[in-house]
Amino acid sequence: PRNYHGPLYFYLMQVWTSLFGESIVVMRSLTTLFSFAAVVFFIRRSFWTAVFILISPGLIFYGRSAIHEMPFVFSQILFFVGLYEYQKEQRLSSLWWALLGFLGMASLKETFLMTGFATVLAISLCFPWKSFVKDMWGPMRVPILFVVLSLALLFSGFAKNLVGILDFFRAFTFWSATGIESGHNKSFWYWLEMAAQAEPLLIFAGLIAIYGLFNKKYRTLSIFSLCGWLLYSIIPYKTPWCMISWSWPFYYLLGEYFKDLKTFSVRLRISIYSVTVILGLVGIYNIWSTAFRTPIAMEHPFVYVNSSYDFKRIDDRIQNVLQERPELKNEIIQVSMDETWPIPWTLHESRGLRYDRFNDLIHPNALIYFCELGESILLDKDVAANYISLTMPFRQFGRTVRICLRKDVFKEPL
Image (cartoon, rainbow, N blue to C red; front, side):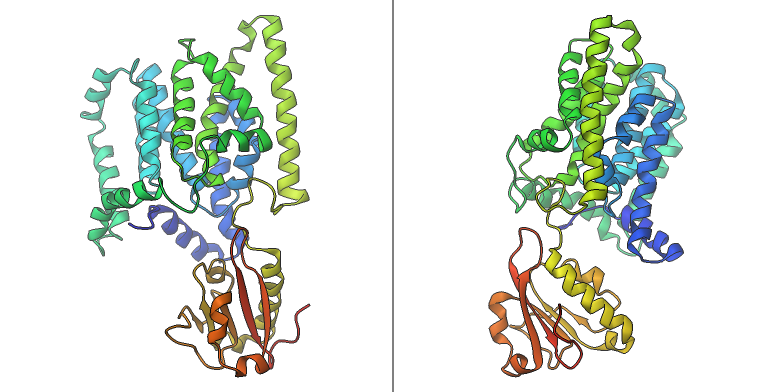
């Protein structure tokens, strides 16, 4: 519960990699399927929304990353759109979508509470509560029971860790503190600054949302969009990939406006088309830039705490040696650092990987030592003679570390 992200994504990834292997392409393809599903879900409901998702730099950049974000966004879409459509037509199938979305959200990320709050605030005024209560306690009782049991099974490790059910609730205690004070605190205006630089169409959609507050037809979507952005802005803890959790509702709103453009005056229609096309082209340029020209441009707001290019160069060298000599995967590689990622991934096939701190234990004659710069003095004198020692920034915005490679295996790295 201290490091709460729900278990669903990890189970999905376990199944996916068991079927197709553990390559980066395979791991990213799982989340990419959720990106594709989001587009398909909107094509018939709101075609223009699907188009805006397709040209969203943020949704493309993070929608192909092997993290929780895109499965969470897809669950948000099912949850809100399900309730929104039920509000308009009272179809039971809409409640099915909403329940499925809630199951996904609650088993993926703690921030589902913010989506739930924004949804209730947006739909509360015009929602058919009487028929909703009747349907939820009538034909929807079995689906509700299914959702509750599914959450219990997921969080208890399929009944192997029953305390995990309580940890589902305990997690919010820890994360309420993390959301206020962490190493990722940003200003209230962080999202607007990010959108202005990387995805300006969102700024225009935000202005449309403000106008929509005074139009009954678009009020629900406008409240949901603006409330989501406001909640993510108020909380100091901000990482850039959270952007897609609040951005898609603005595209849904803009897509609904485009449905009705024929009813607008010619001047207003031309203005909306012109601004959308211009800002959309800026977004498409940013997609090309971040996906193809310079995928990891350290100065770009989407790129955050990535591994440094210096480390990638050394990691490539290590991987080549381990490929040429597989028996070295049994040798000790000691990691004595506060932040170890991405070593758990890049060296996960090394059976000798150890995370003992130098203060507790130094494994003699290790193949490689990774350590904090200040801890390198704890290595004995033999290291200086028998190891190639390198100093480099390990991750973007992170501290400098020392890497020692055993000379009898590694030649001087380029």
